[in-house]
Length: 480
Ligand code: 5AD
Ligand code: SF4
View 1 (cartoon, rainbow, N blue to C red):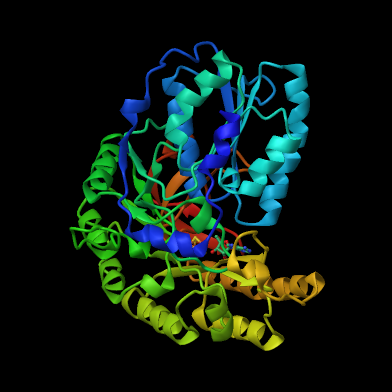
View 2: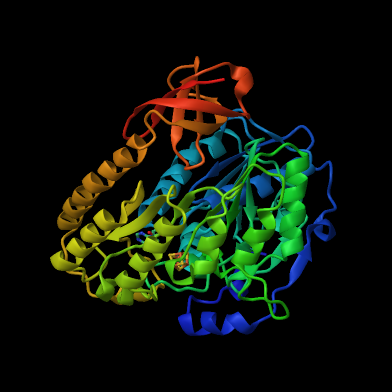
């Protein structure tokens, strides 16, 4: 099988990728691919997950498949029979961490030659990564991508029974796979994919190539999944998509968009609905108005802006302007005054000038973000920005990142301060990291709260009065 891998590769090409939009999305029923139950009896696995929520959701599906095959999760990496690295390709340092980890795991393979070591997720969707594994990392037994998780039982059978290395990556459009078993990380909060892939092609971003074309799940499949979660006692779902605001754009026979989905989910008896990630160009006023109805729709929006300069936004292919972003933010604050807004920002995009960076700072101050993920631009092979001229020294980019982070951190504190003296509802996740008499959980606005309370409250929604706001969390006391 390893020689065949080449036939699955389509080199990242914007022209070809754009054509894929018109193609039908096959829906695959997982139960058709599942026939080697019992195969993992007495054996264990361990998965290391890197990157975003999409990967966390995929790990839950991989665990579901492995446990359906009767594997159990190992406490430690050292004694696992299967180790899988579910990888992220969005920035170079994420990739370097994975290669570093593979170096470390070589020893495990020496100690236990029967160990199955696999790499999956976004990195294998890049041809250069698979080439490197094929040529240099001979002790990796299994490589698969984001589109073919459902074939894991088959791959394991091949690796174990025929002792063959399996490398299979589908790089084209991708399908939708329903009815995959799933072991969820949390018993009260769940990820629910509403769509897969991305067709935006921001010029810096690898995701449209690693996760395939944008494809929306059927609304009934989403609603049925959430209804089952409600029956199991879940209190919060986070709807996942690379651009949730374009949900339904690919439906051929139905006019059903993200706003329609939110309106339907607003009627379900679940306490909290969140979603990520939003794209400013597709976030319409109808969606803002539905969110303003509140109820189970949480007052928290992550709205990546990336840059505050129109020139940079254009070269990033973001398809909105600073002005239209500000108009959206103004509307969000007007209709949902209690909302918390956070964002993503890239510093040092090729050719970004000092003035353009200053425009980002000005925008951040105007928008009153209560948090932001900030990144230094990382060149990704195969993306258009790879070829953009970039003469700014890395040291200057780092200085700009520090400057931006100082402002962002003030925003965190201002955002937390506004809850001092107020009563908030906290969904309790568990014990705080540093003190096992203290509970930790998140408010409706997605603020982390620590308060003294009994362990039996884990998984419950508790009323807490906020006594003190710190930059990264709130302190409070339980009331009632
Ligand atoms: N370099 C730096 N940051 C990136 N992101 C995506 N691609 C890159 C890149 N090549 C950031 C964007 C995105 C977040 C998930 O990661 O800000 O919103
Ligand atoms: Fe990447 Fe842009 Fe798609 Fe987000 S919207 S995943 S940044 S291409």
